[in-house]
Image (cartoon, rainbow, N blue to C red; front, side, top):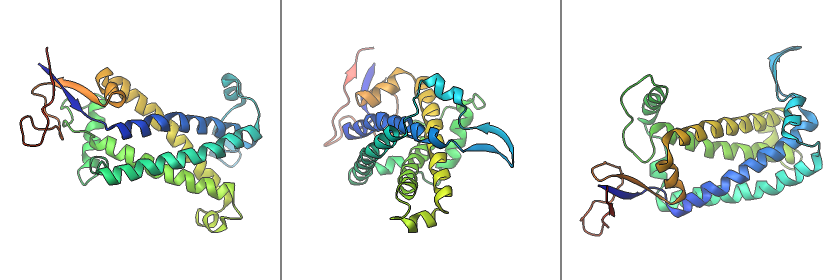
Length: 240
């Protein structure tokens, strides 16, 4: 027998799916801005090991050199990114969802075990929880990265009006480098997140679309309503 288990509230799903295109478009518009002065690289002195990004990268994506358009899009999307982020954080605080998301003292140890399992280096399956240690750390880190992106973005957008912030971040050049590094962090998160979602399968993906997942009737899930308990609804049971 199978049963339906609620996993993600409607609000969380809305914030998640709104943030995906907003952040994607912000990265795209940021690339339009960056192409006007692509100075970042990995190396030392006159030696360059890796450059962000070679001209072939832009040509492969068919990206035009349109600095003004990139800036207009980036600054407009910034307000949507800020609003969506504030609503998300506010909802998690009011609804109590933060209890599932914030890392605790066991999260880092659990994250190592989850990573070893995902790499095939550990046979034992991670515990059945709404968010494992690795997810708690990753999702909390993304929220903190969002705050960092907004602060560094303001520092390089209005370095005179926010001179104190620019100075606090190490100056204009350092603030720009930090903003760029955070963007690279988002891209890496996207890659890992999509790979993990693909690996987890359709049932997990459906929980972020429809809000529920289908599990075995005896399958333990932390936070499940207890069938028959006073004031608790019974999870619908599906035929096998």
